[in-house]
Length: 223
Image (cartoon, rainbow, N blue to C red; front, top):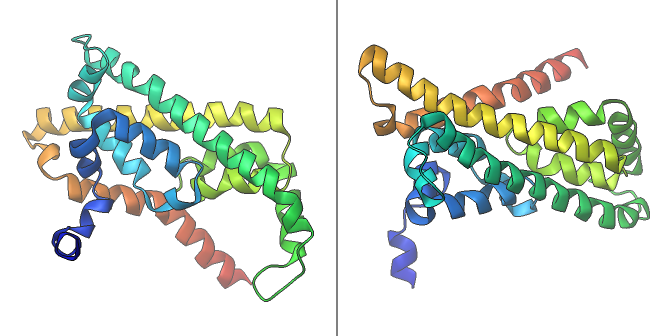
């Protein structure tokens, strides 16, 4: 067992194609579910996994049905992936809803303060819908946004509506982006992006995390 752990390449955990190679579409569906609503799923590569799934859409869709049409194959993937992302957020929201009362009864300490809950509640009252949509496109934040929404008792109807809209848009844009960027680069420069997936992952991580880093930097500077 010890030798197996030593021989395992832990870098594979952040490589989307690793998950597709070992589990195909069904592992992809579980990862999207876990990353969008379970605490331990925050480290999973949701954005880059969907982008790579778009590149490999024609082969992945054959696990369900092969329509022999690129766009139709993308839609075949979009439906179950979107459903799992929606379900993941609902589970996260439910967990936050159930655990929220315990947090409101908790005493302040050097990490947790009641005023944080009050601020979060006011923020979700004002920007809750937009937050649920925007969070879909931000790594780590998309894992915890539905949980916090449940903790602060965000209106359930509002949450469900924006959860569906946000997830559908996120999955569709990532799949379409992966597939058609791959096709464009291949046709224009005869460069096969599927052989440079690690570089793609790095670029996607930079693009999706840059807004958060800039926001934190400028807020700190302003304070």
